[in-house]
Structures are given as structure tokens and as C-alpha cells.
Length: 314
Image (cartoon, rainbow, N blue to C red; front, side, top):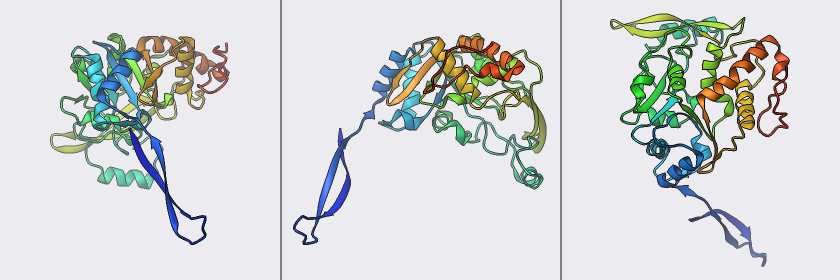
């Protein structure tokens, strides 16, 4: 398929000032749902899979029918026995009061004006990408009743969100915990490898000292009234330990992919990786414990594009 673009006005060589219109013809790809299904299957997505997805719609390229076709292609790839999960979280400010990232004046205004959180209607956090909001609003999608909100659809959807601890919402008893129980997979669909939400589960269950705890307040509806409810978690913003280096999750993820010789593949135009949640967890736990003891233990972890040693410092 071709499209004419970049029309340029130039003066003719005769010098008469008469413009000539020159067009550069470029080619571009528009991917169909069927093509995306084929790419996903080539990557390793298969019937019955439980897949947590992080996606960049822009990275995939132009899709015939729009972004909904991406999650629908995933639905087709996992089939009627499979399940898709994405992390939606919440709009700005709903879990910010008490974290220390707002001024006292800002907190006072939020406390006065912010309505109670409604997990069924609240938009997904913008920094979690476009696809999750398309997925959340598509018929059949379910969510857990929490600001640490997951969107699920498929055979295991109700089980994944069947229980949700209010505090330490990424740890034991969470949807991430059950993703491991079900031997789920993680799909990085052209996304930033530093945004692998599943690694917050590793932070929560890892055995190391001096975890950073944050406490905040969340507005919820109780008997028709807005109530600010206290909540705790290991710090998912600055990191669960002071020793975490910049882009620690990307370094863990890419080191794991390198160690497991996972070269990924293309879905549309996006470079993608499919990995087992349990294997990533088992890889991440000793790294987190080592870095908590000694920050230099992370020195051997490098992101793709860097000269990674593939070795973890002692």
C-alpha cells in the first residue's frame, strides 16, 4: 500500500517563479488483526495462555480498525481457554495524598475536591499506555475494586481478581500472585522494559531488610459517603529499597532475557518479548536481595543496547 506525502513547492529552473509540486511517494504498512494473530503465535502466544500485557500502541504501527484490534488479536491467540490481563491503576491524585509528592496546599485541595474512586468507571493511568483503556472499556472486561487496578478478560478473569488485599496490594493474595499460580506469561509489546508491573510483586515477596514503606489515603465510597481510607505498600514509585539503581526493572528484565536467550520477535512493527512470570520471579528475587545488601551487586545488569556482561556481581 502506498500513500503520497510531503508535497514540496520549489521554484522552476527557468527562474520564472512558477512553483513545481514534487511528491515523494513512501510506503507504509497497515496491519490486520489476522497478521497480528500470526505474529503473536510466532512469538509463542498460544491457546490457554494467561498473559499479562504491557503495550505501546504506537510501536505496533498502524492497525486496520484501530487499537482494539490489538487486544482482540491477543484474545484470538489465547483462545476461549486463555486470559488477558493488563494493569490500569488509577487517574492522578487518587493514591497521592500522604506519599510526599504533593505540597501541603495541593494535598488540602485534593482532600477537599477529589471524588471517591470508582474502579468500574475511572480511566486508566495515562502512563500505562493507550491500549489498557481500550481494553478496560471493551465489553466483557472485569476489574478489581482497588486503585492498584487490573483489567482482565477470559477464562481465568474472575479467579485472577477474586481476592485483593487493601494494603500491600501487589503482594500475596493479589492478581500478580495468582498469575504466578497459573503459570502465567508476560508480554512486552513494544513497551518500556522498566515498566514491568509484575516486578512490584517480586519486591513485595522478596526477603530483604529495610524495605521502604509508603502510606497514603484513598477516597472510597462507604454507605453513600466519600471516606478517605488509609493504605500502605512497599514503595512502587521510588522503589522498594534505597539501593535500587535507575531503571532497575529494565536491567533485571533485559538481563533475564539475555540469560534465557530470549531474542523476542516482531508484532507489527513492535519488538516484543514473551516470558514466563514464574521464571522472571525466580531470577529477580536473588538479584533484589543481593542489591539490597550491596548496591554494587547491580553493576553487571545492563539494559539492551549496552555492553551487558550477562553476569551478576557478587
